[in-house]
Image 1: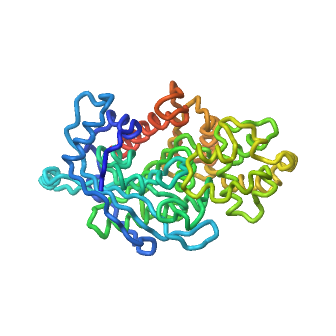
Image 2 (image 1 turned 180 degrees about the vertical axis):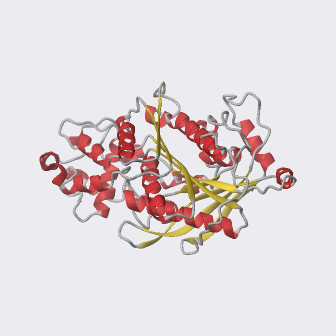
Image 3 (image 1 turned 45 degrees about the vertical axis):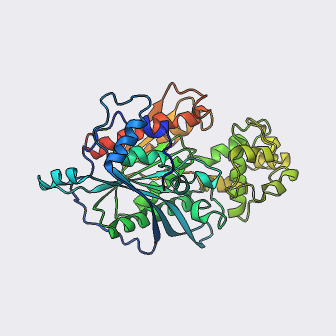
Length: 437
């Protein structure tokens, strides 16, 4: 049950450029279907809000008056927690979860379409979230007390079905498996299984789909989105992948590792590399916390990334202030060995295998980044764009955003960049859907 409506600048700052109801998936032209029965476990309905309610939400939250003409229409909003079958990094079966938000249309709009011989069919966005540390931040958990921020615009305004994976280690799988942080294959597979289960649920509940799919993700989610796009193009031809927007992503895990594991390096956000260390040591037999991190901190890792602790608590427990030297987390002998071994070091090998972007993209790609990102350098965007182009990808776009500053609302340039990045993403998806590009 909805207790309150979160006011989110990410969700509402991007609405002015969209043409509501234009090109929103009318006419079901694709004949493909997917069973999804193997993946789907169950759906738990949270809310079913009509278009009038959502119109009020949009109007009430247009705090900056980004739409000077006001809102005249909105889609209804039905949110469902999806439980689905997938596998962890070790190939073990696990039930994961995520949020599915389905747009619904008014009888008036449905009748107006019927009068011209049209049906309303739904396009989908799979949006992959940024790095989170607490289970409370997972989409399915957020949605139990409020409207999920990105879904308000993606669904309520633009009329896409929103698919929001929690990721392994969060939601229903919290405490049952670890989170495979910045791990390419397992992240892509679990998001793809969420898509399959969501399609199955919508098919079983009479939602007319056109099987057009868009993929987005911010920060960690951009890494997942890139891996997911490759997975879809390799092995999932049921959907028509129309566009992929990757925002502020750490596409080259190896670059992060190389930049961090130096005796004179500082960590802008120490919790990120601590999370990588915890996750990789759980997944790989040739990576261990003992010997990698400072000896007195090894025991502190036990249970630290279980979804109960936020970033501040994690960094406080590890004694790592923002901008801490790498030697405060990593053992100096380990750093020396990593530097001298180069690509032959076991951890370096694991980083390299989890880099993303080395494939020939057959769909439109948009690499979005702020030019002064203070956590994920803009060089990541330049690098993955060049990599995709070198693989003869068909349509690679790059959108570099200037003028974003630190401070409110999210503290860092990296956090604040999400606002214009999502605005650009949803406008770009809408242009593709309308056939403008």
